[in-house]
Image 1: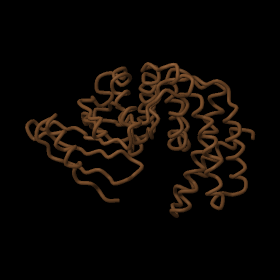
Image 2: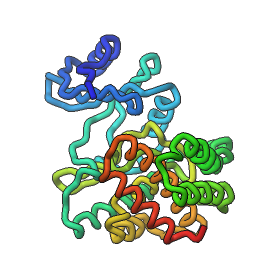
Image 3: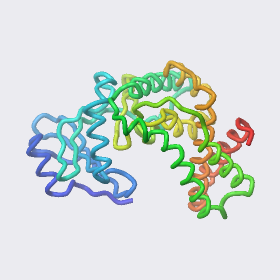
Image 4: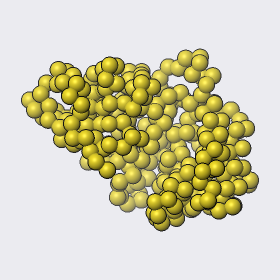
Length: 296
């Protein structure tokens, strides 16, 4: 994967008009699935910032709205501060936060439990933040139906990489997801929490990257963790929901199991295509766990 070493000239010029002379510390990975983000330092005082270009106008609008209306509820130091936006460039400037992403932490389980407790507390504050319109409240439940439909369509293209039992499990859970009961709604992060949660050297936790933030069923924010660290270390899940302040209701538990299986199936197909046996084993463990949890 290559890097774009500097922002496009018009964006860099805008950033320097806003902040002053800048030096680029790290380029942006040229990955079409990610927003381009450059880590820059202001040469006058060494202050560090991120210059971001959103993938599309919708992502720009979501991240701008999140920073202005929801992120302040997280508290000082718990998220980057938005300094400037340019709709013409779909660009934002935010403060850079120190820390290591959650999915790269190598800590003892007792410490990880504390990290997940704090993550639960942080997500609870976000889910309760932000104002939503009547339209957003009406549209939020359709996220689950859309994901179920996508899973069924996706299965047609990856069926040769899944066993017959795995295909049956995915289709059955996609169908159940369409008829799950009413779920608690809130202002979700919507992105991969493993890379978006940062733990600093002084053990503080912060959340970044709000381009997918929106009003939706809050259970959607738990899927990435359920497909990752919670499989191998179930106490981390317990710690997270202790910090979150409540456990999941029956319909939420069912929805999370369905969403976890659909995500694992998609990742399993990709892992087979890449020949990544570690990822294959992880995804199959997720599907086995869900199969044990849900009677299909």
